[in-house]
Length: 389
Ligand code: FES
Ligand SMILES: [Fe+2]
Image 1 (cartoon, rainbow, N blue to C red):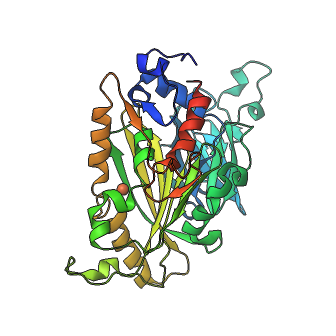
Image 2: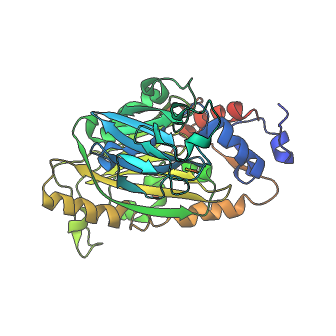
C-alpha cells in the first residue's frame, strides 16, 4: 500500500516483521500515531486504585499528549477528564497526586466538582443570553476498572477490557495479585529513555534472561515460559517463574534477592500501546509510558505491595524494587543503554529492524517462547494495518 508519508523505506514497506527505520523517527508517523493509536480504540491505564484509594483523591496523567485528571468520586466510581478548563483551556491542576472535591481554575476562577460539573462561572451575567453552566463541564473520557487498574479510552468503539486484552489477560491479572487482594502503593521512580516509544516496547520485557547479565549471574530463571500475544494490537503476557536465589558468591548481601512469602511467580506483561507490568520475586511494578516526541519516552514506575502486608515486607519490597528492577536496578541497568543505541542506529536513512526468532514454530507469533521475537509480530501486523502503511 502507498503510504501517506514520505520516507522511501516506508513507501516500500511490505513485510510487518521487517520494520523500516523511519517508523521510529519520522515526525509525521508520530503525529499519525497520536490520532490512530493513542486516541484510537485502545484502553490506557490512567491510575491504579492504590494511587487514589479514597473518595476525593485525584491524579493527573498524560495519555499520548493529552493531560488528564483521574478522580475517585464514589464507591468504586472514577472519572477521567481532560485537564483543561472549559472556559479558555487553562490546565486546571499541575499536581501529580492530591485530594480535592472541586477544582478552581487559576485564570478566571470557574469552579468544577470532581465529576467535572461546572458550578461557578464568574461574570456569567455578562455572557451571551443562552449561556448555561451545565453545558460547560469538563470533557469526559470513557473509563473502566479492571484488576484494580483504572483504564480510559478516547474511542467510544473500544471493546470491553476482557476483549481488549484477550488471552494476554491472565498474566496481567496474576502480576497484580490475582485482581482481588488489594494493592498498596509503595512509591515511584521515573526515567526518560532516549528512544522512540516503540523501541521501548519492542525491547523491554521480552529480553529478561537475554540482555541482563545480573539475571543470569543470579540464576533467576525458574520455568520455561510461553509468551502469549493476543487482544487489540497484540499485548503479550508471560509467566516465567523464578526460583529462590542460592548463594553463588556474587552478592555481598543476598538479602536483597530474598523471596519472601513464597512469591515465586515471575510475570511480565506488555499492554499496547505503552504500558508494562512486571512482577519478579517480591517486586511488583506497573509502568505508565508517555511518548515525548519521536525520540524520547518517559516511563513512570509505580511500585506496589499488598494492603495486608506488614512493615517488614513493605520495606523489603521497596528495597528490592529500587535495587533490582528499577531504572537503575542492578538487573535492568542495561536497558537505557541498549534502547538509546537502537535509536541512534535507526537514524540512518534506510534499514529495517527484523523480528525473526520463533517464527518457525509460531508464524503468527501468538504462542512462542520467552526471548522469542515472534511475540512482537502480532503488534507490528496490527500497527501496519491500523496506520495504513
Ligand atoms: S480559563 Fe479557566 S476560568 Fe477562564
Ligand atoms: Fe530490561
